[in-house]
Image (cartoon, rainbow, N blue to C red; front, top):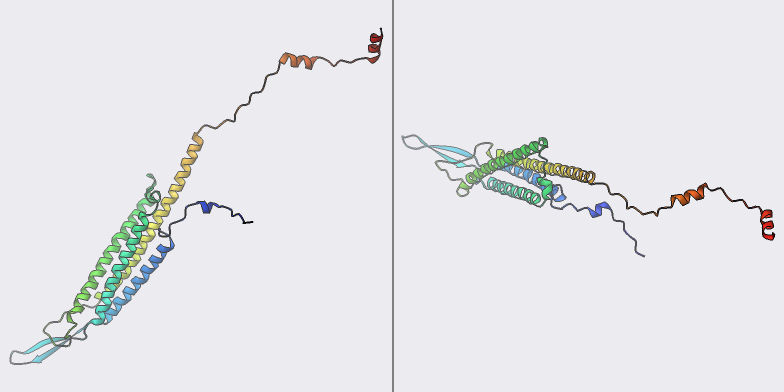
Length: 265
């Protein structure tokens, strides 16, 4: 005989979407974003350490003095590869992270995201300002880091061929440009994580407010409705005079001897 399974409240409640805010997918994407940001930071440090440098050479020819020429210290392939990888990696990170957040918020229950009590303005304003700060700061750091990496890619790609030939002018990066790009890349992913946590907190607060508001509405509807009375049953009335006559009349006592004499005359 098959066993019967008990149905609990958890079985009847709607399941949480696997791609929503606070799900395992969101946590995985946030961890992956931070790891990729660290990887871009390391690539930027490698590009900074291996960037091309310039050596100036002077030659004394003729009466007009010497001619100064410069020579690159390397072809720039290694810093170019690292800077390009960091540039593309940071772009992919931002697209994936913000695309996921947009998808998760758009697929969340509207009541949990739009519901805000009009008089409950303290936490709502605080979260709005936090979200605005994280959003703007994330994109500013992202744009700055990408511009610095793009400058490094442009400079290092200018002398891939014949880099050891002396030339009258050489274009090189200043110290700290690529490392600053790595710092901005790392800051970008942490700010993006802060934006995700702020959106998650706002969703949970709005869901809590919605639950409280629904409880208040249900309680008000329950107490506002008139109480239901039980159905009335009709009981047949008794004759009060008949009942009183039977109650007030004393019991009849019969003498058997007198009764037998009356019957025999």
